Amino acid sequence: WGGGLHDHLNDILENGVAIERVWLSPFDESFYVEYSDSSSEWNVCETFSNNRLCDRWINPQDILYTNDSIGQEFVCGQSLQDVKGQLMNGTMEPDYIPCMQIFDWCGNTYSVNNRRLWVLLTAGVNSAPVKYVSPPRHVVAKLENGFQGTTIRLRRYR
Image (cartoon, rainbow, N blue to C red; front, side):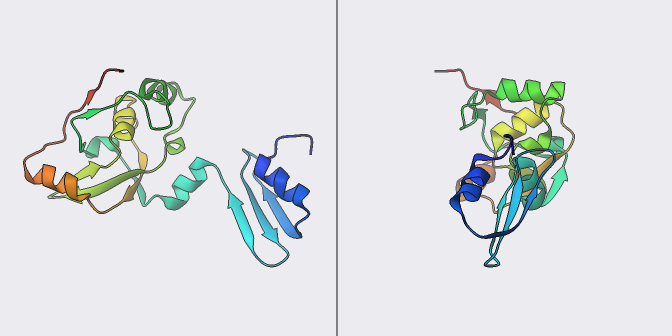
């Protein structure tokens, strides 16, 4: 092939497993394999997963926070400021960020993923993929005690 294939697909092709068909994405390293035994395998980029897994797209401005502070990095180590910048300059699309988990409570919508919400809001994104989930118990207790969720602060680096 001359390169450009996902490492996992290279492993499949070199493994000698009986394959019926392979579909390759013209845009990225996504692929679909149909094996001779009628089983199949997907390997897709985050944007495909978001579009398949999210319930809908909504404006982040309609969503409230569930914490009063957040760290400066995502769990993967990527800086919130870097992701915000990439969204603002168009080198990243909102669907590259995993679906934001949200829930409705007493007429408001809240995010379980406060860092994602902050990045989307501060970058000025007006539509993002979301997945509805059940409200976590600890968050419900916080909301029942009057937590508003309208603002959040970035904690300093340690």
